[in-house]
Image (cartoon, rainbow, N blue to C red; front, side, top):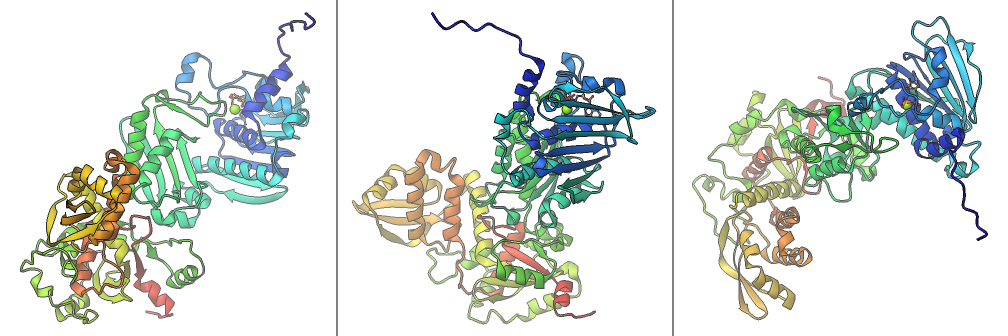
Length: 626
Ligand code: ADP
Ligand code: MG
């Protein structure tokens, strides 16, 4: 044997710290995060961040917190030295951001670290320096209050690590992310960021909403819903972007658990689920959410940088977050008015770019949901019923007395407002307007123009109707009331081998959706009945798509996991098509349906279904003083 057995040795302190540094402060942003958390734990109300060369050259954090006593300075950089926990039990309800006592020790091993601090009540400040593990003596220093920690030349003595650093710009980007997350969590703390001598931003203490607007932007703020749900074990507050403010990336997803920024798979999943119905697959939601719970119910000590947490009751956490968001995102049309603050700005921004913009103002909120019921007159036919009078409708439609007066309205005169509607429109009593107002006309077969108390409402008729049909289908299927209606004359449809097999094997699937299908030859079926709710349905095309869905997902998944997709397919085919002429009463019926339908502010794909143009903004557009 030539290979000697290596002897076991205790590692030197410096090496231990350098190894730990690989986990705790693996890049400038991680080091910055640790320093910022220390400042917050010290009760600071003001934190100034000063970086050089993306933090690689220098990370300096100055705060006005409690400070560190002169005699404790050397302890602060000792490994496993902390003022935050003392016994194991403390770990179970740790309220501070730090507690492992590793950060300063790690930083002192891989940078030139200096700490100046003045403990509350101390006669003067003190300063202490550690370079590559070598500590200086503690000296008197000049500092009015708080602590200044500066880490320079990161990884100067561990070149292998240094090689892993990215460009200055990338490292700076990560540092800025860290600074923004922290600033978001503590709106009452003033935070500033300087890079290479330039002050980039400075946030004053203020309301959470103002901080959110400062970091996620005014546009987000104007296009978001506030969340405030409090239950016995959990509470969640914050803002979630409305679907029309969706993003191409995950860059604006801020989630905090007990004030700690986390990336928690479980919670992210709950959020994603809540958006699944209102957001198109490829888009990402934006949010700033703060979940709080008893510290004993969540373990933050499962990850060296505490980016992950573990809930004692993860199912309850998931459900709570899902329901809070679902509720906020389900509000119906009257509460989700995408109001346009400045129409001119809106028009120019639309013409040049495809990215959606939401502007301030919650115009239609003034007319709230209480008025909706008033307008859901029992006698009023729904839009879908009215729309059934289209010539190529497949169904025989029960035409009650109430629909009769409208039955001749679709004669091309639908831009002419009847006398009775005109008098309602002219009514000075704005309370008389339902939230989405009364229809005035149809534009190019695509948009409905309506007048409400605030001004002009513009509705994308297909998108709005698609959402209404979709929501109705979901409700009906849940209640097992997706009624079927016989066709006046059955429709024959030729099918390939695969589809013939699917139809015969999954009779029940189609029955649940309201279809009655019968094979009339080896290559042909008859559609004998379809969903009563979709009188305008394009049965052939809809069936073909349903068969594709069925083939792709299998019958067992089709009506469970893929249920919403299936209903979406039906809604798309069942919704009124562009270029279909609508009579004024039909348009009004659609508006009333929208008011009564959850999530009708967006179509199934997350696009807005309507906009509000406030009268005073139109006045501005025409420079019309009043
Ligand atoms: P931890 O934060 O896990 O306790 P650190 O190594 O980050 O460990 O810090 C060690 C100790 O130094 C802290 O427990 C705290 O007492 C003190 N300390 C660090 N930074 C500050 C600061 N900015 N203000 C006051 N005390 C500080
Ligand atoms: Mg710390």
